[in-house]
Image 1: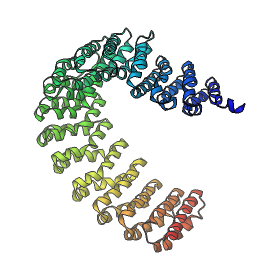
Image 2: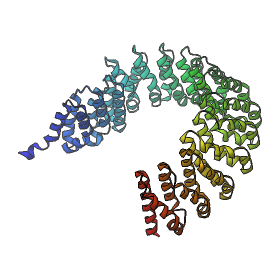
Image 3: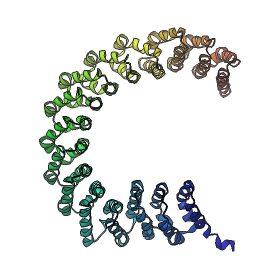
Image 4: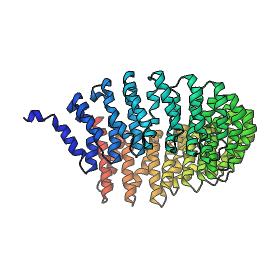
Amino acid sequence: MATIDEPLYPIAILIDELKNEDIQLRLNSIRRLSTIARALGEERTRKELIPFLSENNDDDDEVLLAMAEELGVFIPYVGGVEHAHVLLPPLETLCTVEETCVRDKAVESLCRIGAQMKESDLVDWFVPLVKRLAAGEWFTARVSSCGLFHVAYPSSPDQLKAELRSIYAQMCQDDTPMVRRAAASNLGKFAATIEQHHLKTDIMSMFEDLTQDDQDSVRLLAVEGCAALGKLLEPQDCIASILPVIVNFSQDKSWRVRYMVANQLYELCEAVGPEATRADLMPAYVRLLRDNEAEVRIAAAGKVTKFCRILSPQLAIQHILPCVKELSTDSSQHVRSALASVIMGMAPILGKDATIEQLLPIFLSLLKDEFPDVRLNIISKLDQVNQVIGIDLLSQSLLPAIVELAEDRHWRVRLAIIEYIPLLASQLGVGFFDDKLGALCMQWLEDKVFSIREAAATNLKRLAEEFGPEWAMQHIVPEVLEKINNPHYLYRMTVLRAISLLAPVMGADITCQKLLPVVIASSKDRVPNIKFNVAKVLQSLISVLDQSVVDKTIRPCLVELSEDPDVDVRYFAGQALQACDQVMMSS
């Protein structure tokens, strides 16, 4: 008897768990659906499990979301592609629920299943489902249907195709704004599956309806459709149909629509081509750069370099640069920050003369901006300017500002400068570096912020790699070692960190003669934090130094530390001694 009941067991347990009050239990059982389906076999999955899931009226969105996701990959468990249509009913139900993320996931799963279904099955099962949803009384079903047309359309016969186009046109004029929004955001996908002659007539009339919608939330989604449709149309049709719409949108009464145009402008330019961009879109872009809403100016400023690439340098200097100058002193710090993040890229486009005359003063004003993010964005892109104007001019004009920023009150700005120093050093050369920036690098080792001290130590290592051990021995090592006498233990710890980073670059001889004695002397420090850091540094030096030095100098010091009253010092000394033993055994 037990063997007869056994196949019923998984579905019985699933039914119990899906009716349980504990949401976690219900969730887990949904996530185990594939295991249950394997246990039941393909036929029973089709006849029992899927109908049960269709009837399951769980009201928790998390459970429904998990179910929508699982069903999307369920084709193998129902017997392959020829039986894929049995998965449509439970997903159709999920397409009508109120929670947006559940509907979106159900639509995604239906698209995945539809992409694998046979053409005849799509016509028999999938298209009727789309039509039912599109005729749904509740707006949620109609919203979901908009995301399915592009799957249903290609394999339908001509008569059905005409019907689907007509239904989609109704969606674009639906009474509910949410449905029109869904129609607007899916128009590009649907248009990509439609024949060219219908594209110019049916789709363009739908597009026109959406662009004139009284809801700005629909119009701003139609902006995205501009770029998608522009790529599908012939260039001349694109200029005739799409370009006037973009120009109108750039003057829309809703700032959100104008923001969307500013954000999508580069893609729109690609769609209409360079000629139309210069003639029609450049004035629109200039208007957006001077928009009275800061959000629109932010989006437009962020695209300034990309837009200049499409124009000739003369046009960029004549029309875009005056706007850039205005934006560099904009009342909104976020506009200035967006501009600073891309303005350096204009230097290669405009060329050397224009960069020196027009852009350098803007860079300088942004480098002195009161808002740290603006300064940061300029610092991080300096190399793009260096390639155009050369290091001499860069150092004369921008270096004083950089030195000023090295002492900036915002630690993140100081950090950005430190991270940029090795690149600057390699560009400036050793002589210039010693004169102007050497003292700064030492100053940072005694910064109040730990991240700055840590970055300063790493910076010294990178400079030693750039200029070589001999230079480091002359300019870095003596000054670093001097700081070990600092009365504050945190600064002494930074020196130990710098020693551990410099040792591999400096090599065994210098480490043994100059660096190791300082570390050993620090093991007598009165602060336990210093002593356990000494143990860590000694452990890192084992791989750098000869075995004889390890045995004679490092090991005795570690043994002494391993008997320290402080538990942390003993622990790290023990770790270092173990590392000594391992090296000894391997050698």
